[in-house]
Length: 164
Ligand SMILES: CC(C)(COP(=O)(O)OP(=O)(O)OC[C@H]1O[C@@H](n2cnc3c(N)ncnc32)[C@H](O)[C@@H]1OP(=O)(O)O)[C@@H](O)C(=O)NCCC(=O)NCCS
Image (cartoon, rainbow, N blue to C red; front, side, top):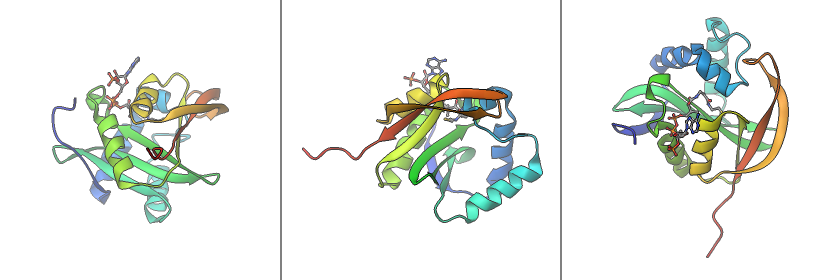
């Protein structure tokens, strides 16, 4: 369990340097796989974040641990489906932060089904999704910038709970 209080709030401009630092981490990039072409390109990062923060179809929340911004969770439209994703600062990994943050996000965003994607070898992300009720529905392939090659990824889905 996270040794502190996990909360979600709207993104503030002051959070962006934290997200950029998270994006620079080579291990995180390898895990996420389908990443920015050049994670160190701050201009491209700023352009991307300005675009997604202005897009009403994208819901982004900053994840805080004891009020400190440590990552983000978002949902966006992809080929007619709503997908979720998230990224946490490496020093807080394996403390349950992503699982708690995604659970909180799912409570705020009641639309279902929701989809997610994770590289087949992104065990931590697959575990987070599994703990939050997502189930694998398909395998897809795509070019992963962080790997420099095409790789396989799992497609997952979260449905509304069945009525009793
Ligand atoms: C993936 C990521 C969000 C996970 O965040 P986190 O806060 O460490 O996740 P949690 O602690 O809530 O849960 C991780 C789970 O995976 C497990 N896990 C982590 N690495 C593992 C491994 N190599 N093998 C098996 N299990 C592993 C943990 O034990 C934990 O499961 P548990 O609670 O049952 O013990 C984080 O590593 C990250 O930001 N990575 C870079 C960006 C990324 O990959 N985003 C997802 C894109 S699909």
